[in-house]
Amino acid sequence: MVAVTVYLALAATALVFAYFRFVFRFRRENEAPYVPGHFLWGNGAEFAQNAVRFLHKSQKALGDIFTIRLLNQYLTIVMDPHCYEKFSKERRFDFDPIQKQVNNNVFGFELKSARKMIYEAGKKVNGRYLGTGMEAFAANLQEVFRNIQQQNANPKPEGAGDDAQWQSEGLRMLTSRTLFSAVFYTIFGKSASVQDIPDFNPQTFHDKFDTFHKFFNYLWLGMPVKLFPKACDAVKVLFQQPLSQDMLTRDGLSDYIRFSTEYMLQHGQSEQDIMGHNLVFLHVNYNTFRVAYWCVYQMLEHPEFCQDLAHELKEAIEARRVEGDDAVGFTLEDIDHLPLLDSFLKETLRLASGVFMVRYVTEDTDFDMPNGETYTVRKGDRVAMYPPTIHMDPEIFENPETFKHDRFVNAKFYKYGKELKNPVLTFGSLCPGKRFSMLQIKWFLMNLINSFDLHLPEGERTQPNTEYYGHEILPPTHDVKVQFRPIPDAPALFFVPRRSPRS
Ligand code: HEM
Image (cartoon, rainbow, N blue to C red):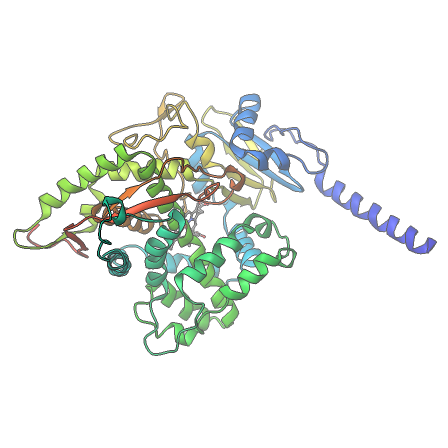
């Protein structure tokens, strides 16, 4: 018994020493100042409480670059938004170990020849693929909207007032049944010949993904999924996907999934790896869902903004309507030329983002700040920019807490008297899906505004949950109920993959 106690005591002491050796270090000359923190877990608690508040406070005390510690991890934070371009281009700030950490720790696989694969796959949502991807998305969206309209078309019960036309539903479910379903089918297509797996459907996947995603930050940091029974249950369902050969036969399968599946098969990766990668793709698209959720919520909370958006859309429809046609076509360029919608989306992205732009430092690197000072960032540490601190900076955005739908119409933004080239950084610098995702959300909103009246019942309010800072897009603190009803005789909108010669 005594021997066991002595052995445990020695082991514990060794562990403590190992941790301290790893964690405690002296700041070298030329390094950014360290933010004082708890001797064991560093700045983790304050960071988790409200990352933006904590980083703004540290900036006030220490300036535009400083180092924090999250447990044993040193992280140098660059706060000056004018550093964005330099930060993104610095080759010794590497995203690959971060992406590997997500793949390994969260989705349980390793991507072979990852850089080439991500680069090539990223092309499948850009250039000429943007039009085909949008065409598929628009067709899927039209179908889900049609289903909802038909469900709502039941005749009014006799004696019922106007209220009988309104349907009521949670906003999460409404956005899931519409946008998430359309995104899901645009990624994975539909089963043509193979018997479908019952759980491989948008709503089950959305539910399970919601549950799993709550644990994302813990898993990312390396905690085993087994510690979280709810995440384990969700993962079991999420891995019930068609095998790769069946996936490749599905109608309307996205070019992205087709390419990545074939690439992974050629590199000898297992079915489990391919399914893990499919979930990574679903994960990035899940952000599109969350942004759409916030857009609809802002329209509901501010009906006057919704009216302005509807007015802009009506004018665009009238300008494109061909006499005698019931449907009105929009090209990619047409969707882009709606300045108020564009501003509304950017404002939503500004307020809902919780994203980190984080990189691994591959060599000691001298980083020049715009004020002429140079700081050395240490090899093996991480370095980051945290867009929400920029998005909530009152010097850049007047009254940053307030949602202002036209904030970005013909506007410029300044920090330290100099114009910012990129004031909204929700997609970081590397995301290849930025344009596709923004177009999908705009098209979704155009169709929603065109086809439905929406109403937020008295007392229904929510807000972004800042406990989830670190997620690309913050979830709501809780869901809200919404009421909606189809607009009779609304013209159908259809997507035109290319500008027609006549326009
Ligand atoms: C609202 C939707 C989305 C948001 C907010 C978002 C955000 C981000 C962010 C913040 C990063 C890290 C960038 C950095 O650190 O510089 C990223 C990376 C990435 N995103 Fe997105 N994303 C979205 C949609 C998409 C879509 C639709 C795709 C589909 C192709 C996509 C594919 C990727 C990939 C492949 C990476 C990793 C890039 C690399 O390793 O070089 N994302 N995204």
